Image (cartoon, rainbow, N blue to C red; front, top):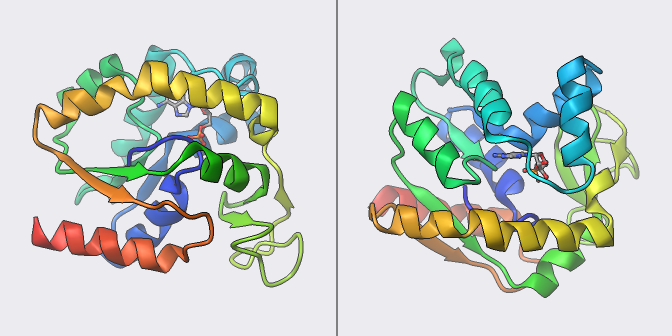
Length: 209
Ligand code: AMP
């Protein structure tokens, strides 16, 4: 799943994972887990992540590698938030093949609107939105009853920093994947489109290709 922060990668990937019966791997979740564990590595990672900066390639590639070597990944997986740089893509190619890159095209105004009202479950990482995707009980995850919170990097000043970084460091990757003829665009110009609508579009793209 490819696209700027707030384009819906995690929201759609978790639903696609259930439909396709393959795991959804969010490197952002792996990073947050590591921070939560308060390991030395977690503390180092937090210095980057809390400021909206990318974690160094060697660190994130190691976390990803550990995850995709688990048995549940044997039949494939959906990556969300990885790769974000060309060296990461090259590293990924050493251990697996990429079937498709779903590129989510969302205007900046929609992204900012979404991220400033996004809520995340502290326990399972599920994503909600105060305006567009409310939990059944305020402040509580529908799936695991965990507490919902606003991510530190979903504050307006950090959002701008993440968007700039996306354009500079991650968008060039699209050219890399275009050259391999792997990119499929999914456009979503409004903030309140139900996730199921977009997921259906993605399923159609996956099935016809
Ligand atoms: P996300 O949940 O995908 O927005 O990721 C949250 C944060 O985790 C990012 O702002 C980065 O600090 C870090 N992160 C996640 N994935 C990567 C990646 N592929 N490369 C570098 N840093 C990452």
